[in-house]
Amino acid sequence: MTKRKTILDIGLMKQKQDKISVLTAYDYPFAQLMDNVGIDIILVGDSVGSVFSGYDNTLPVTLDEMIYHTRAVVRGSRQALIMTDMPFMSYQIDERDARLNAGRLIKEGGAQAVKLEGGEHMATTIRAIVDIDIPVCGHIGLTPQSIHRMGGFKVQGREDEQARKILADAKAVEEAGAFAMVLEGVPRDLAKLVTDSVSIPTIGIGAGVDCDGQVLVIHDILGLCDKYSPKFVKRYADISATISAGIEQYIKEVKDGDFPTADHSFK
Ligand code: KIV
Image (cartoon, rainbow, N blue to C red):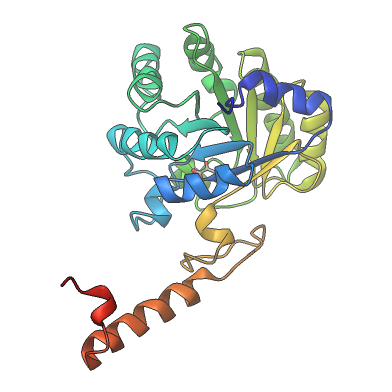
């Protein structure tokens, strides 16, 4: 039986300077595909709201939706660590709520860890969840659930004061007991400074090459969602074109009476 990676394996990767590969998945087939080729962590991201449900941002995603998607991803994987996003308003109100909702993602969803956004102001919440033995990954810098405060998806930490705040956030997240942190949308030099200043792994997205690992949204790297294309995304395939061609051919064959043939029919 294949052994699933744990947060201990992920921590060791930083010590050994092995880069950590992370991708999002929201369903069984994609989880299976990436798990089979050795992805280290699958993030059931609340980006599901944008790339799967078609919302403008992640704010409408519910806890029940995250549980549903997590179950599918867990069923489709055997070796990756499964981490799920706590959606907007599932942890911001109080620590009791945060613990209960993190617990549901573990107990009902089957995740091994949760991720939540915020630095110093979320440190006591992270600690409260970690204290009931649920591993937490922090997420600082550009935090998509704060889109209305940030006034859009903007790089964070370009000014000195903001950069100092992000470094303080990183230290607070580490001290609160998080096992890792996502660093999103920050200048490369700041990401390096943070990575060198904390003992837990940093997983970058739009944060340059010096982080301990990288995360991207699966729909972005496969060309499955052309709603927006941030500078930090690299496209590794264009499966939209392949899917469209297949569907077009199916429609044509049905209309022309070329499908089904005798081969697809029962006697
Ligand atoms: O929801 C998500 O996919 C994320 C990553 C972009 C880090 O949080």
